[in-house]
Length: 111
Image: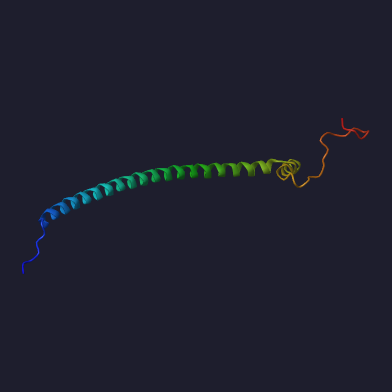
């Protein structure tokens, strides 16, 4: 018996497979390069944004410290009446004791 031989040469397909395989590898390499480029760009953008945010945090912490020192100073300089009035403005749901806004005249009415 004679061995079966296809009507075509298998080497033709191997060449095509190698050519298409090479183009697939080339496309894969291009995709990988593009993905690396995107990744590098994103990493750079994220690092830059992180640095900006760190600087903003430093500025806010410094401003907060300054305001806390100012608040402490103002509290020490304020009279007890001023502090009470200020506290009543901060918590309007808690009624503050009524204090006369103007001095009363001898007849009991405000002048």
